[in-house]
Length: 55
Ligand SMILES: [Zn+2]
Image (cartoon, rainbow, N blue to C red; front, side, top):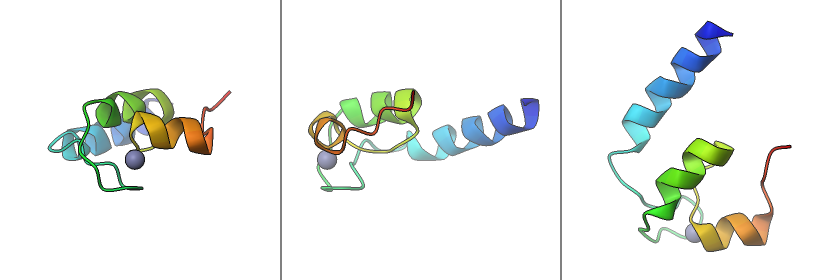
């Protein structure tokens, strides 16, 4: 469990260098928020349209 969290944190440190949605390539501050919340680096509009909420 700890190992998995460390990997996630490592990804975040790399990804937070930009807020560019990997789906539509638009920069938006919600991209980083969604990355934390869902694990997907997408903007709010893409998140909603793809409905990628992990439950
Ligand atoms: Zn997007």
